[in-house]
Image (cartoon, rainbow, N blue to C red; front, side):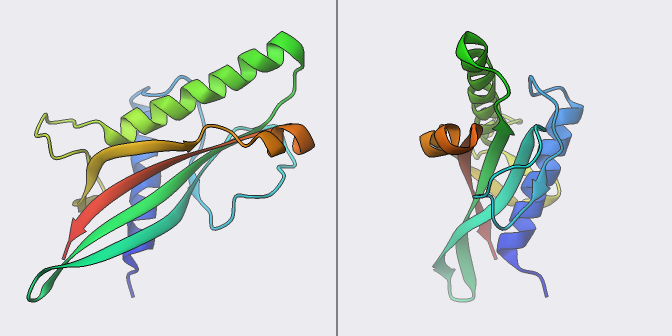
Length: 158
């Protein structure tokens, strides 16, 4: 059984992999799906995790529905430096957040309909991505960990 929320989440992971291959991001990472990203990391690697966030369903016609499917992209990494170097490390992660948000929103074909997910043609970006949480101050204080969240929403009609 296919679950639309998971299908869109996996399609966003695939889209990020495509972006990496096209050098769309300033840093290298391996995106993957996850169901819980609110824990302390045990390594210093950059983690880009895509998590199902929510779904809104509206009737579009007698036998059709319009779905707004949201996914959260978590950017997480342990901060290894202090002082000005720490600031530079955090600024680099904030830059990556913006790159991911722009990439997931960009309209490749100038159709003004938003970006289509290559592995799921029925899913079209709403043309809006939000850096919902630039970083979680508590994670920085308690775990010395950067945790930022980008939310992207895709429209699917079925």
